[in-house]
Length: 133
Image (tube, rainbow, N blue to C red; front, top):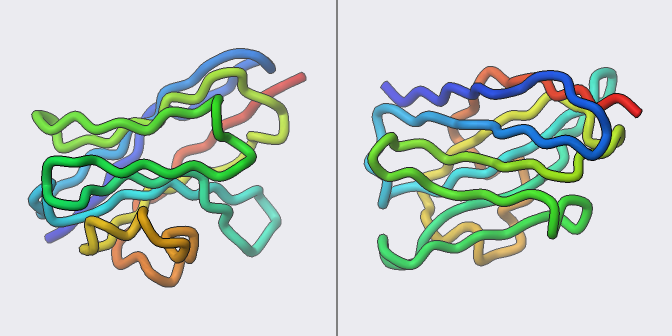
């Protein structure tokens, strides 16, 4: 059974940092890509934030949305089968519920459709991030 478990959300003041983690079970690391999405409470759509995958199981691919590029960093911990999202210089507009999602296409980050929620097969339960001004 494939499971994704997010952790690390919380409340922080503007300019602060948080680290989110997505721990994957039931899938071998070289066989998938992970993306982070966020959803503002009350809004129907989820915004793509970042993606981590690979081309050949060794070369990692990363992508970021324009709104977080330069502030957020996605990385992989093979030993823990965990993908982390380090969020620096947080802004009030970063406030949202953050979700990690998995698709069994490791190279998906290289294509524009990594931002489409319909392409992901598995989702975590979400973790809340609140940034106060």
